[in-house]
Image (cartoon, rainbow, N blue to C red; front, side, top):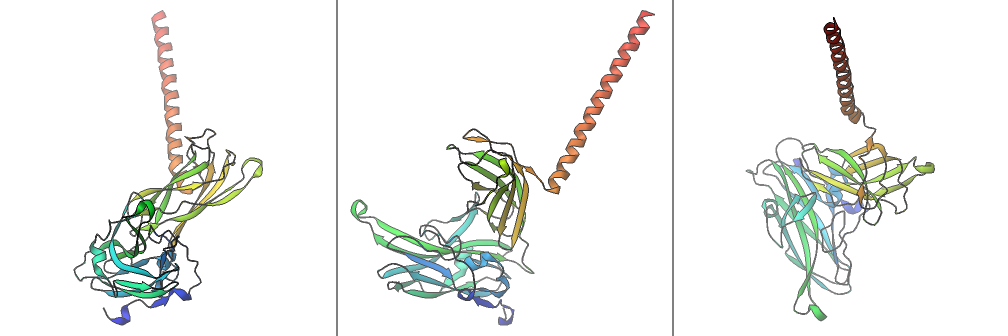
Length: 347
């Protein structure tokens, strides 16, 4: 592909963007992955395409849409935040999306996308507080069929166990997810819908809501967001409360997001506003909900303020009213016939 047609890259380090951390035993769910513990390393992107400056996911992951036959590069940084030299192994592996989660293939199991990603070094020795830049080159074969693919770039350190763990090698790793859509033309649209919202009290009595989300677009989504409550008992307001992060949905998939709220929150009713985001897309649902009183139980589904919900409900109410009228009319006609039959027999 001609260089002039490749997306212009912008250094991430020049962007005013808040990077969040994640444990070493998982991949970086947002921005720089910075594990805890004495044997620790981190990883983060150093550049993103200029045309994705407004896409928060592209600041954290390798997210792109390319034509078959395209080759592009991304630089990322691996850094040592421990007080000793770390030998870091660098490699790619397969990934997928299942049951509302971004999943990783065991160890170094490859897939199609991971086999297309080549790193300019397989290992590096980082001194205390040291860091190094690594280049990933992604080469898409000209025969690659249309579709979105997932992989992960791992940085891994190993250390021998101590005490009762002697003879066991402890492995910590951090990673960068890759979401790559291949196909001609422009990038497929991303979109999602917020469905049923159910209030709940957990077994320990904590209020919680669970919202069903459907990915109606053609790219994977990673959901984040918040829930706010207002006009509660005694005109109380509460929140915003962040959703539990980690829900990822492939195109056509459906899953749930959850929000845990304050322990002493009254049952309600409450006016709510739930806002969810994925990259450039955000959706908001408002309505009324009431939490159940009993611990370990579910309440009635929230009543939505959405015009779509009214459109769906009104025909049902109209049908119910029409059915009621028909039943009443039928009963009246039957009563009249019985009355007329009785009059005839008496004559």
